[in-house]
Length: 386
Image 1 (cartoon, rainbow, N blue to C red):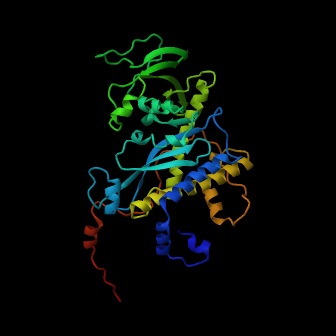
Image 2: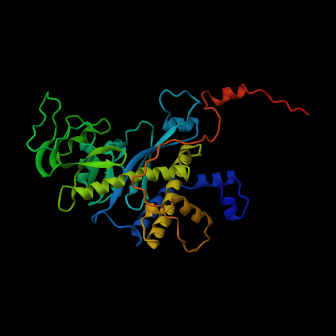
Image 3: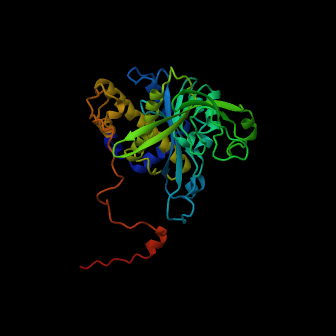
């Protein structure tokens, strides 16, 4: 919208652009997003797979919307927040390609919607033999079983609630006991790498209907491997993963740990979406407009990543090393048919740790603690002295 007047060589007004955008059907924008994702997958310069398998990352995030009655009703506001003092929050569930960073799907959810309750919606976009990687919020018997029944592998950080014990012949939980693992030990592939039988919980999750829950198998074999991550200047981190990648010959401990390490890239993807395309706070004042704006942001994000993939292939590096903002600036300034020039390559910084603080404030305005209508009444008319 900012660059449209200059690109079109015509004084297009903002209101005209907004009306034209509202006439675009949401289904067409969603189809464009999926088409761009599929086109990147088919491109010959796209990075390869993980041990012959397609790998995808899933994670949840959120974005702010304007404070209008329709958006408050649709998405909701945080509890305890008084009317007029905050913004409705639209939560998102993203599905990304692990090695290109492309957005495969971005689901819009209401506030306080549990992410695993909606995680089954992207499953039809995956195929047998794919790997879905996520954090502990997605690790449960139900989710792993849903993926297993579709022939999809799951790799998630183990939720802290289940007790994991890698010792062979350890005793299993019995009714009334506490502090014992609820999974049955099957065999040990290596030190800190057992295969266990995860039993079906006695109670279904609140978000699931009883009939599909009853159709799930009584147990599922899961590989619960544990490894340690040394971090420079910080304490060593112990990580326990739950996965249905059971073959230790095809999928070794080191290879699985390396794949899970890629999961952190999904945080970078959401950070890039919120910073450069400014998806942190959308501008549309209608529910349909918010959904369209998010679909367009994801589509533009895929276009930027396509330029990064192409630049990485030419400059013999990986797409994550190509500067995101530099690719955006080239797309804004390039003429139709212009050949992609060399892009800025970030140096590798595997042990870089920075505090989340800023050295200066962008402005000195106070935070709004009361509705704007009340604050406006307190403003005194300023007199102009001649």
